[in-house]
Amino acid sequence: MSENIVTNAAPITISDSAVAQLNRIFVEESLSAEHGLRIGVKGGGCSGFSYVMGFDVKQDKDEVYEINGIRVYMEKSHSIYLIGMEIDWKEDLDNRGFIFTNPNAKETCGCGTSFSA
Image (cartoon, rainbow, N blue to C red; front, top):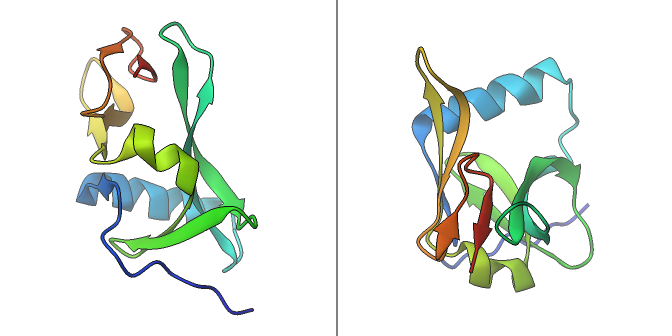
């Protein structure tokens, strides 16, 4: 299967700690080589949009990026909401999970997974 990886700059960044967690999940779920990390948005959540993140297979409308060794699938139409976003992993006494830092978000809710643009 031939896959066109977009060679221009990826619209998002993924921190080393997030890459480590994503690689761990990939191995634990015994995913195939055709799976990549889907990043996107959907309507809903307390602020208007919610982030979508999970492993999936490529769809026709996806652009494909290689970010820190992770294959990322993203619909081109979603990039206007996500360009410049960083995905990080936080683990401390109070919280554990992925953190989305999005410069396009006008407001975010307390859960950190919902935003308005």
